[in-house]
View 1: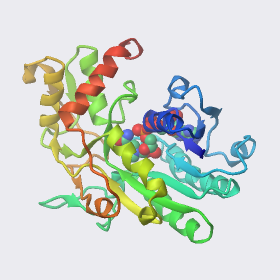
View 2: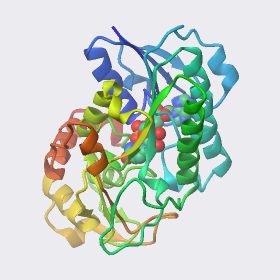
View 3: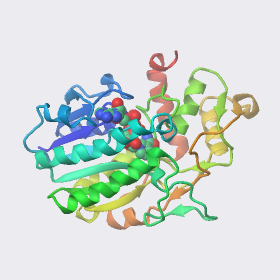
View 4: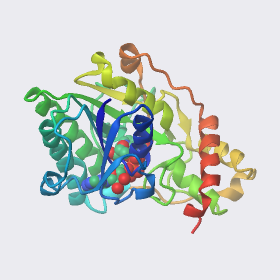
Length: 320
Ligand SMILES: NC(=O)c1ccc[n+]([C@@H]2O[C@H](COP(=O)([O-])OP(=O)(O)OC[C@H]3O[C@@H](n4cnc5c(N)ncnc54)[C@H](O)[C@@H]3O)[C@@H](O)[C@H]2O)c1
C-alpha cells in the first residue's frame, strides 16, 4: 500500500487524481487551502488538511506521515490571466509553494515528486508549424508562466542535492468532469461551457482562429499515475497534451452541438482580448511516447459529452 500526498487535491485535477489513487488502495493525504478548490471534491477516504502550502510554518504544523512514496504537487494559482491581478501572490502560490513542498517531501522521505507545470512556460510560440517539443525556448508571457518555469528549474536543482526523483509535466489545456465551472479566468473550454449551462451566449475574448491542444482529464491522469514507477521518466520534463490542434471556432461548434444550440452567430459574441493570451501551439508528444506506453484515447467531442453528463448531474452547483 502506497502513501501519496496530493497538494491541490480539492481542485479539478488533484481531486480526480485523489479518487484514482484511493481506488487503487493508496493512503492519500490532501493539502489544499480551498482558494479555488472545494472541500466537497476531496474524497471521503482521504486525510484532508486545509492549509496554504506557501506558508512553511503551516506545513510544519501538519501531522504528515514520516514516510511517503510520492508527492504530487498540483496546488497553485492556475490562471495566467489572474496572475496579472496579483503577481506577488502568484510568486507565493506557484513558486514559493513548490520550494516548501520540496522541503516537506524530503522530510517525508518521498521517493517521487511529480509536478504540474504548464504549457505557459513556452509563452507566445511563433512558428508556422507550431508543434512544440520540450527543448523549445521558454519565454513565458504571463507571471504564471514565469513562476511555473522558475519552479521547474528549482525542482531540478533541488533534486540534485536530495534523494527525490522528480518528473515534471507541462500540462496543456486540461478539461473534463470536476472542473470549476465558476472560475471564469481559467480553462477556455469550461469557461465557454459555463455560459451555455446558464443559457446565455458565449463571450469570446480573442480571435476565433486561435487554437489549443485540449487533453481530457482521464488521459492526462493515465500518464501522471503510470509515470510513478516508470524509471525512464525520472528527472525528466514532459509535455502532456495530445498533439492535436483545435481552433476556438471548432471548439465552439463542438460545444454548441453537444448543447443542441445550432446558430453560431446567435450563441457566440467575440469581443476584447485576454491579457497574456497566445495564438496557440500544440504539444509535441514524441518524448513521452518514447519513454512510456501512453496515448490519449478521448476525442474532443467524446470528452465534451462526458463533461456535459457530469455538468447535468451537478447543474445546481453552477447555475447562479
Ligand atoms: N487545468 C489546466 O488546464 C492546467 C494546465 C496547465 C497546468 N495546470 C496546473 O495543474 C495544477 C492543477 O490545476 P487545476 O486545473 O486542477 O486547478 P484548480 O484551481 O482546480 O486546482 C488548484 C488547487 O490548488 C489549491 N491551491 C491554490 N493555491 C494553494 C496554496 N497556496 N495552498 C494550498 N492549496 C492551494 C486550490 O484551492 C485548488 O484546489 C495547477 O498547478 C495548475 O497550474 C492546469
